[in-house]
Image 1 (cartoon, rainbow, N blue to C red):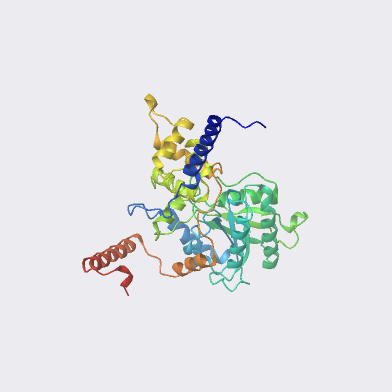
Image 2: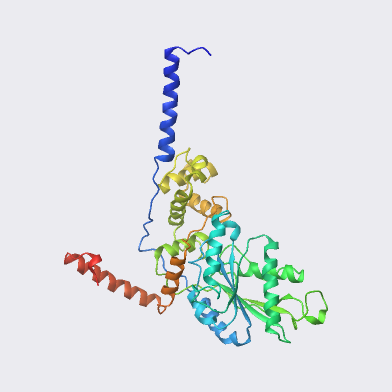
Length: 393
């Protein structure tokens, strides 16, 4: 091959150098945020009147219940655990169901997380100090066939229950954890019947206890698989129950991002910024080529401007709507179209810490505010005296 003239060689070298520079700037030169600063003004509760009423109803009906099916969101497996439900219903056998598995990370990361959760929850594990009545830990996606193992487990427990009247179960969990959807899927798989519970994308669709819904036929039907089930298996849908006070502000952002609290309770711009923080830590490539001309950014305004221009979230006169773009990216992530990942760190250490925190007495909103106010006074006084917070104690 002929050697190119010196000028041509220089042009090629310059082009390569420019390409390398762009790559370094847009990829290896970008540093994502290592922490997310949450405003102290972020709402820290979503504990409504019907949540408290639901807990009271659970206490009243627990004597007639043979099984608890608790739904937790696989995207926030630690944060979506509700200690109030643990205390209220701990005496009954329990199946823990992690919903939205299809919106979590791919293998092998998902496999590692699922293994850690199973090892922690099951009674055979020395780590399980929360509920020794846990009978199974299952991970379900939106695919109907993934509910078959859950139905088989419920039938098996119903046969152990050995009651002529069959088995009554409660499906419980945080708001919008997939309880009603789960009930409908079990009814479809077990009885081949249409849905019985109303569902929706926002929390609070179920506001009171439902009537018992049969998900498995009784012995009198003489259908295959009904042997030993008495009158059958019935599930009662319950309202989602939040916690009175969220101790960690970032946990509130996690729950707002997955839709555990009503949209708008936490500003959409804040939720979108928190999503951007996670996108950058997982893989900026999820969004940068599509919305930001190949450049990663920690600036939520720059990110949302690109989203608005790409998706047509514009006001009159062509002005971009950052608020509209923020709402769009949150919904797109919830659908799985903007990366699939878990927001919590899942390890034996974080699970043990969650247990430790849950063992502390539950605080009301007023009690929590008073405690925080006292804490600020102590920190301010230490600052005035020139004492480092690390010296406390």
